[in-house]
Image (cartoon, rainbow, N blue to C red; front, top):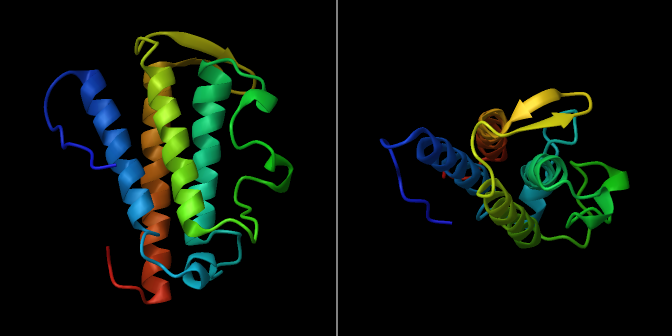
Length: 162
């Protein structure tokens, strides 16, 4: 993605840049791993380097395509296999496929977010009233947390640091 580092400027530029930097950091936790290492289960949960990226792509779709664009689940890209859970990666999907899926979902999220002001709100069942600002902050938090998970998994795998 090659995000330009923005360290000053308006609130929106800072939020969007921080989110993009966390998206990049998350991808980098898996980039260069072998297919076997990307799928290695080193913890009890389904958390693997590839599954964290798969989950992040689903989070992008849920928060931006569903909540902000108002698309029905069937209209969102990548939902054909949703019944298996957001961390589940099929045997046919490669690490490159899942990285590309996350990058596509991220691009679409940027396009959707660009239509709204930070103070615009949506009523979301189970979440309440959320603003676009809240959504950007929630995604920053989500992807930063998962990039940390990815760093630890990569260390456990014994792959060189990113």
